[in-house]
Image (cartoon, rainbow, N blue to C red; front, side, top):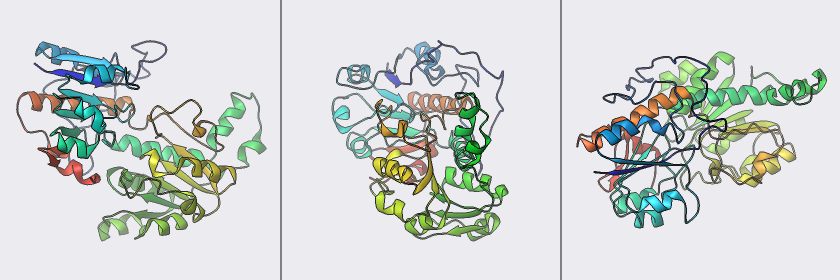
Length: 385
């Protein structure tokens, strides 16, 4: 029998379960492009429930315990005496989320002699050291596409909120109890007519471009793989061969690139200086793609008019992280891909992966990042080792 260690974010401060705003969520059976949503044999929860936290446990406990396996769920993942480090030594499977990542470092892998499977409940497995996983023959899988549309919707929301300066206007009528129209509109613009760019036109980036087209903006993008000509014509896209060209051309930039050696600190002081004065950056990809302090400085001196990010480093960040207090920000705690709608899909995907693993059936190719000591499957295309 196996031991499964799930590292999930803590329960709501008001207790679990919460009172849900809706009684149901729409049923989605296919993603854009035709890939089907997860198809486990059954679910251990009702779609729309909060299953991504510790008490939710991704709905896995009855399924695993009925099969005789042991499930340990914790949110304690930091420090040498964390529950993650104590429980990892004899774990066969580790489940984590991008929103509360259990960083599987080479050192942790060396101390996890039985570990054979790492599952990301969601998309984005850069919290797992992939060369270490290859060396130790650990299969790495994630639930590809499960929250891509969720993140794309969040990015569009960010763009509108930044350009229209929504949050400060909201604070005038709530926290400040005022009715300050002049203050509320002094940084408020229309998106219409702006040049809006996407860095990384994969599943999420392309979904953002599709959702922005009706706003009558001029759309730009950069990606390693250029999109088909008919799609460029359909969306009215301008392709930039270089990131620097894209950054200089747009009023708003939405980042959707994977984190790897070539994208770490890509947006440093020099790159930010090439952008139009008063540009906006939205980052729902990974925090390390931008230089933390360079973003703060650019906002303080007006080079950037706003920065909205859902990703931090580390996660959770320290209490005095400068992004908590920098001006003209719209930061959130990595929730873009953790909607209750997305949770239903990625929890179902985790169960599907586990069912395949325990029943010795192949895991979907789309879910696989590392298998058999090598990068494997279509899910590995976003990663370099």
